[in-house]
Image 1 (spheres, rainbow, N blue to C red):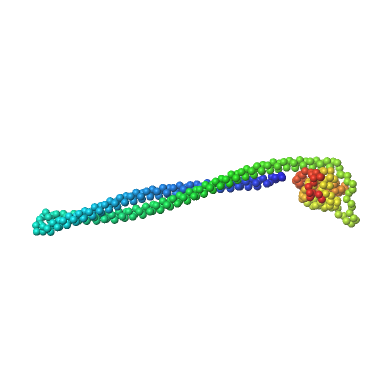
Image 2: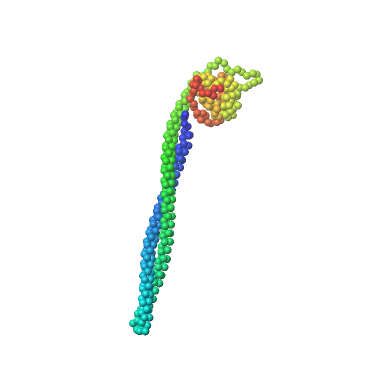
Length: 357
């Protein structure tokens, strides 16, 4: 099968388009992977900040715990001092009541001193209670801050997990895109190789066509030099009153001229293409004749003369057809080599089906 050169360009364009599409998707996957890397880096930064905040909250909680323990110890000490002061005051009072009749300045100062110690103990107890209340408040604040740090840490871990998932998806998409790009590149190379083969085949076909055209032209020249073929008899004349022979001088266009050639073949008994080629001494091929009769362009003059000879045309017919051809040729300036492509003559014993009349 001969691949036409016209089919090479769409295949090459399709392969190039597929390769460009794969390259675009590869770049898109790389961009997605880069965004996933940025999300993961940002999530790692958030997690590190959460870890730092959590450690700071834990240190603050430990400090508040120590302050609370110290406040509780101070409260216990204050309570002990108050109890001791109350005990001392009671003892001093008992002594005072025991010696009520012989009070002196020393005993009064002892009582006053005991009362002062009791007041100081009460003050220390109140201060310790205030410190304990403040320590409890700071303890609750530290616990709340620790809870917030833990929640922020959980959110950062979830964001890191999502970033890892997006990164794995981006890497998977990148691998698939690279595989598709490689396959497209291989397909593109294969298409280009096939296109090269098609160009070589088209070049070979063009060379063969040129050679066939040269051979066909040589055969027409040989047939013209050898003169008209000697036929045993011509077509019978029409009945009087019936003039059915086509008149080539009535043709106004090349298409009408070709149509009259077909009618002249029918009028001459409709010989097959193979028979016409045989009568014309193989001056042209059956495929060349078939293409000429299917075309709407003016066929070569040598082929027209050989065709009329093969259809048992008379000298008057030959002159009429030649004159009609020259008139149309002079009116329609179209190069003869553009009328039809040269086709190699087929052997009579292997003529393709459908070419016979």
